[in-house]
Image (cartoon, rainbow, N blue to C red; front, side, top):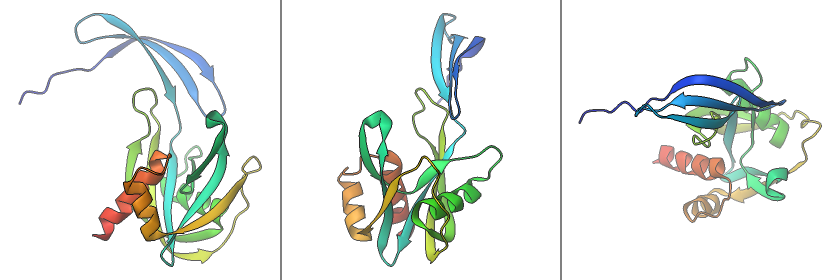
Length: 178
């Protein structure tokens, strides 16, 4: 099979907004057929997410998500700081959000929404958890919930987690256990 070249070439760049966490951009590109098009997208520094299992229980955090105007039940996660290694960020976020640290296994890195963002989420599995808390960020309000691993697995398989990184992380760990 011959691979076609679908690459788009940037002709001009425009910054729409640059915030504390994200930047919004609008580029004009040349399409493979020679036509021009606009591409609006978000640049994000990347994030981590941690599937933390303690004594057959999955540690989750419930927090309010302003864009959704409601709360979500998620695996611990957070944004990479400038120059921070994903594993270091994962340990920091796990300690800040659950109070635990543990041995990490990398499960992979995935684009969260490649149609409009370059955000990559690095997913880890944490085991052998030990109590070693850090305080949460000043603007972070959350509650830790623990659900049995088998229940979490069934919920992920049935699409009952509304957060994609949570469902994916659970299913990746289940695949690693086989």
